[in-house]
Length: 385
Ligand SMILES: [Zn+2]
Image (cartoon, rainbow, N blue to C red; front, top):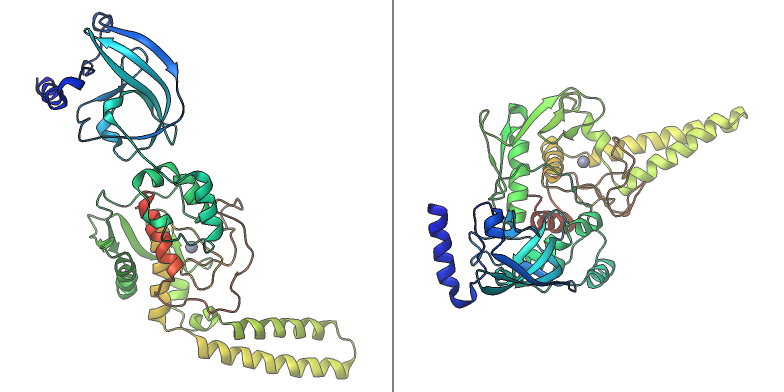
């Protein structure tokens, strides 16, 4: 009864043009016989979205006039036209478009009065914008398009800006995730990391959760393989490294450290290959000097534990937001290689085996680069959070 009543209201609002409100209950053969296709033809591809204020209780139909999906559930979805038809329902004529969603998951006949034509950037214009923009950093133009654009180009944008298309959604419809910090040793670092993202994105994306009610759990785990890990539900810090104060020296990463390390490795192999005792001693002395200089540089550049672990958690929360790695040392989402250790397949824009900005310092704190922030904003727009 309630359903019928709402339908009647919709028809009145639409006035004389609302002749094509098909029965909302399962169409029977008898009802179908009162609908006649006058003509049905192919049509060019035009871009539409559902006008949800008009289509509150309307459906898309199959060619045999059966309900396929409720239009109000697809408010942000972009549809492309394939065919059109003129039909006669109870003596009145109306026009329907056969449309398919941009992700090809939904298709059906929709009364054209429920469709709004949308203009979105062409795919060639998008390619040009990506090509002319900063690598892996979505421009302000890309970040200021309509929802139809993000819907239509979701996979292109994910690929070109290294977003994780398979990202699990931790986020509520409000775009918020509750983080429960199980380990007290992580509390300060977790708060810093959450604040960093919330501030950069201008909203409370990460809020405090409890043991009973949360979307993401932060905990510690034993591992010699990684210092931080995101597994889709948890963010772990390794107790092996968390409890090792000397670990801070080994993570220090500056151009000076990398240069000293390379020189030291070269001298070490020359020392090993040398057979002349005098020369071998010279290599030994030079190697010792370089080694001492390397240790001194590492000590000098070692981040504080708070900076480093807050940075690691910021990186892991970046994964939770749908960000994959980049080859830029200056990004919180930096990784030395595109191979994540689980699979060698490249899901992103390209593969890499070393930093693209080797003369820069690696971010060792919870701060974000412009690229990190722009990518996170884009991840939100394509629906990853
Ligand atoms: Zn990572």
